[in-house]
Image (cartoon, helix red, strand yellow):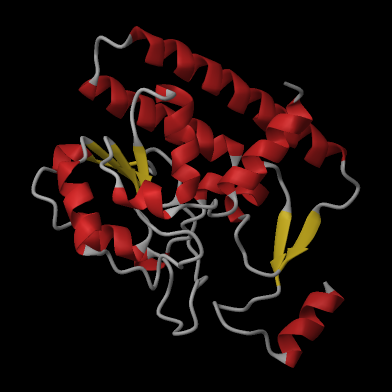
Amino acid sequence: MRIQHIFIALAATLLLHGCGNKEQRNEAADVIVSIDPLKYLVEQIVGDDLTIKVLTPAGISPETYEPTPQDMIAINNAKIIFSTGLIEFETTLLGKIGDKERVVDLSQGIELIAGSCSHNHSHKGHHHHGTDPHIWTSPTELLTMAHNAHAAIMRHYPDSTQYNAAYEALEAKLKSLDEECRTMCEAARAKSFVIYHPALTYYARSYGMEQIAIESDGKEPSAKHIANVIKQ
């Protein structure tokens, strides 16, 4: 697969919450992931061996997500639960789980960035302790997240050598993507980009770019803020 195709596939999977279905949400699962972008990493390592359930329904903001009784049963029955460790509902919900060994924080080892973005209209803050949660939008951070996911999977399935081979293939794919993004950004004449919601903070840091957000502190932009963006 060409690197351009890999980038398109990752962008579609990692930047958006993918389409889900009711059947997936009602079936038992071996693995729970808090948001859809995390499913890609786990799938690349375990393939079809394990069933994976995305906790947040498609089209629902993590800020407004409220688990159903069926969701809580699935969480309690899952062997492993993956989260970013940065979104408020994750810490609130997963903090209630008694067996902490089952809960894996994929942000471990990542240098986090302070942020104030919000994903809802109540402006309560999308993330925990003022930290930008969008670690899955940067291939550099995805490498660390993939390492964390693989380590957790191997703790539960130490004899599954095929997972090691699958992880190595994923790592190679992400390293190629990382290098392609770095080369592309270094060659670009423009070193900044405009985006409505500041979701590419980690991407910008990794590749020496400046992110200019239209949204201001999780709120609709004022006329003054838009004028400043235009000036930039």
